[in-house]
Image 1 (cartoon, protein in one colour):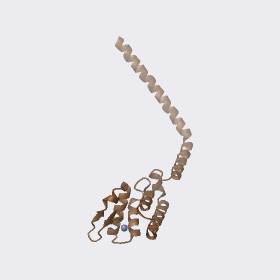
Image 2 (cartoon, rainbow, N blue to C red):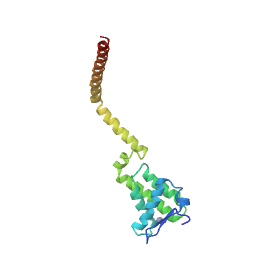
Image 3 (cartoon, rainbow, N blue to C red):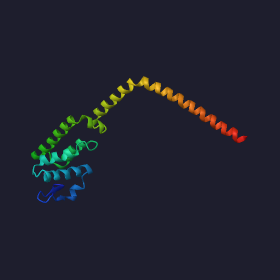
Image 4 (spheres, rainbow, N blue to C red):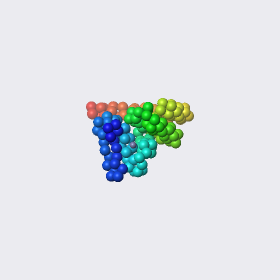
Length: 167
Ligand SMILES: [Zn+2]
């Protein structure tokens, strides 16, 4: 327990927290660590890879940079020089890449996970804007005309009130 932020008793489901490590983590990393332990319990497995995948599946796409945060979490907690740890980090990269491929829409919707996505998105908007520009300027013109006549009406009403008040 000394070098791990949390552990679960798979018989009882009791989650043990190592405060010294656990509370140094970001809120996202704390979620990941907890879900990793729930993974051990719910899947009834001692496999670190399966527990990592369980946590990843719960968190992928739930917030901005969720995929990168999952990877960063393992990179921060594990030692890449240890072969078992290296395998877990590599597996997390694979999961993230696969999830990214499977969920292109979600990625776009969650507000530009990558700069490329942001660019693709604004390109889409530009195309849309170019297509509807003519229609838009017509709409703007009539809107402008309407606002002008409204303004004139308002000025007239105010003038009338002043005139009537003086009388
Ligand atoms: Zn574990």
